[in-house]
Length: 261
Length: 329
Image (tube, rainbow over all chains, first blue to last red):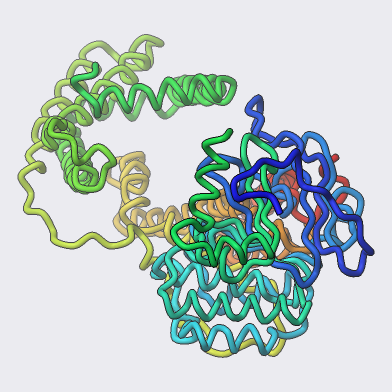
């Protein structure tokens, strides 16, 4: 095993069968006008795997997630979700995707219940899943269902964004800073819920986060996005070693990797 | 400039807007110049300004009222900004009163320049222009007294309460549906049509009426104007909401035409019903003229509104990749 903080030339993209491949990103280049943000990102998330995406501010995590959601057109490279190319089979790919929108982009003038109904209909569901309603209950969100989003706090909006992402049993769940604003009890509920989904191989999770405790304790793998590409990856075993190391941990490994750049 | 962070940050924001969106900024500026020019050469503009110049007392009262209301609102906003701005922690800031006075001076200058433009094309006489400018200046000075209005405590979400017109359904629908999406532009339309936004426009409509018009005619004109503003605001609301809605639903597999239909059906229905009621009321007064003029105009507006919002929605869907196939590389 390589020591923590060591560099690798790039993450190896493992080709596996379409059934188990939740997400495959190859040589992705993207940016805004002349600003290049991503320059050759390779990433794979299998069904039954939780990948934490780390990186300093403005490293391109959200840009990568927006490319995966199809809201930003990459300049080069390919993205496939459950074997469906986001280019040629966008609708099939999006059916397998559960994307957590930014809380501030949720519509102020609709109620939580209306948002859930609209999103469920947009995903082509005939009913809102029992596990999503159970999660809403655990989040203590049901009392907020009939209030307008304009009156929601950041944490409550975050809960709704997560519930919307989990609607319809998506094979790939993509979340951006999903624990921002959540109270500790709700954060624990969400971590356990996602872990249970992943362990049951119901989905793969790609979580962009700065919460290192989530990465150390709940993720199967972690990847560091730096200078527009995946600069470093930590396997489950490496994360276990970092978790056990006294005084070291992922925080130091991450700082070393960033300083090395 | 470094000694005035508020001013320099605003200046930099303007410079950046021009630097990073040169075409858009120039287009917007050209649009404003053309719009002002068109309004200046419109046939009613000269007579209205001329009348205001001749009846300087009325102009003084109107200007004092409008500048007073504007002063009160800007003072409230400036106070909120002074407490919440990212520069609020800095020791030096622009005093609220100075910001309010500067805003009034800018507005008054714009008004006088516009009147000078109308004077320049010969639509009003020199004496009318001078009386109008003096009355407006005096009105603006009186309106500045609004600075000393007592502050209200507590700041709510502006305009938000206008959206809640009826109780939201407190149970699940029998099956998920996109239809609640239609509430979004309708609610935004109600916020745009709130009285404090339509009142100044209504004032101009009332001013355009000939002196000595009967009271019932004035009431009818006011009612019709409010209804027409709400119809127009629904179109504006639909255009404003569509990008946010498309971006929100882009990661789902919803088709673009289904999305467009779900977003706009309520807007179109409300507009059609409002116009139908207006035509019905108009036909009671003058059936032949209503059917000959109002009916085709209403149909034309509905069609134009539908075309505009559909075109904007289609562009928004393409831009954010909603329902798209073939995006990416």
